[in-house]
Figure 1 (cartoon, rainbow, N blue to C red):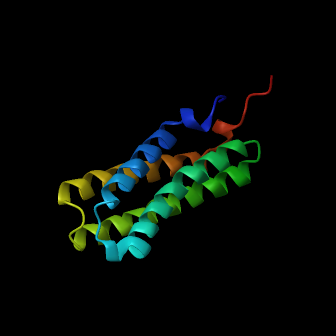
Figure 2: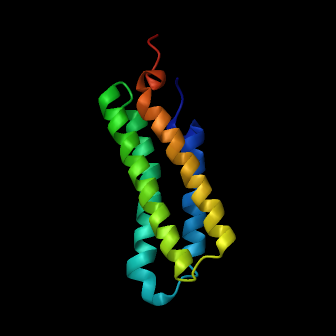
Length: 125
């Protein structure tokens, strides 16, 4: 598998979700600026960053697996912040449900990548 990490469907999904979270979190109350807003933005961005880092190190299966599991952990953390945002009344139920489903799918994809790192090794040419 060649190309860029940007070609990975999981990266594209995570990036789109991150941008949506950025947009939605602009509407959160000011008092959440240095708490919930910073946390949800940081964890969602970290999903993307860990995918990128791991993909660049894919010649080393253990490192690749570690970064994919780190990305999965950040995706799980993001769902906690989404839950809190909904329960605090900052997200509408349909926004929460949709984003939670996206992060569930991202987690499944990352889990599959971590279980089969050889599939992502660069081809020797």
